[in-house]
Length: 129
Image 1 (tube, helix red, strand yellow):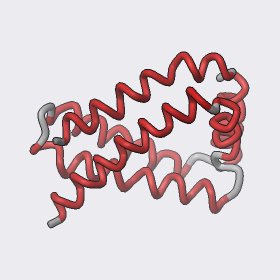
Image 2 (tube, one colour):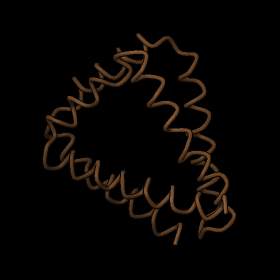
Image 3 (cartoon, one colour):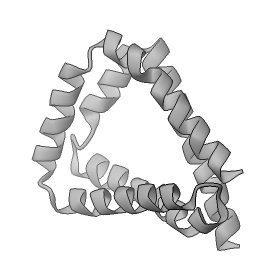
């Protein structure tokens, strides 16, 4: 049952990444606005980190059943480790990083990198099915 749930969490994660790509392509200013909110409050900070743990754990649990198990396992452990690190990084530092990233990622850059989100989301779904 847990493995089946992990599979669907990963598929939803892939869909989310693709949706994010469309947001970056079609509404880059909105994507920047969302990025600026990252870690802006304790609630947002710890909610986003905790939610990241769900697909990370699913990637690790389901990795042996996918087409490229090593890639999923590595990606899952990377997401898990960085999430745990973000729990101990001061929230203000995390927020400042998000703000600086939003300043660097001008709308044209978001549009240019959006195909990578489509590719990543598609690869996640393909590897799961």
